[in-house]
Image: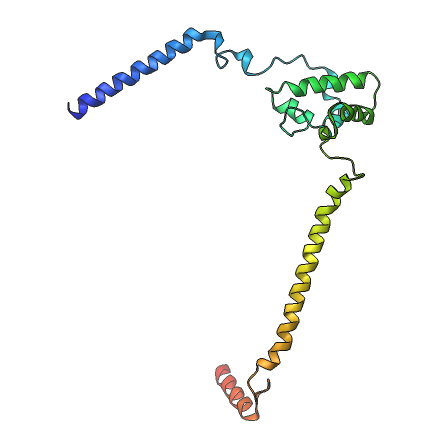
Length: 190
């Protein structure tokens, strides 16, 4: 078998495989979730004026979606159309809001129902203060230690510098050396 006949045979086999795969996909029809447009995302309800209410949006920006995406509820429900949790959480918030609850009461109800992990930023009280203060304290401690070490090394270098100078040499020039330097500078200026 030569090269041309091998390539022709391979192309025929590949074309037959593609045709078989297309027939299988067409025979599945709506059973295949990738072929069914309703299975890819979820059907959305008609938008209401409360969906874009600033008070509800402010509440949703403080609460984490429970689907595991670590986004706030508002961002999850407006960007991830496959999430089934955020629309339900939104409906729950709207229900509490229309029931006369304030933003703080709604957040408290969510904390009571889902736990403190539903908050994007925990309240700055009790043990949660450690989470707010510990990073700052660690940075200050590391900066102070670094400054102390660098100042100590700098002082040690300053104290060691005069001892490292050769004996009999001072930092100033002798009269003979100064005259030669002035003569060399004068020649450069001309």
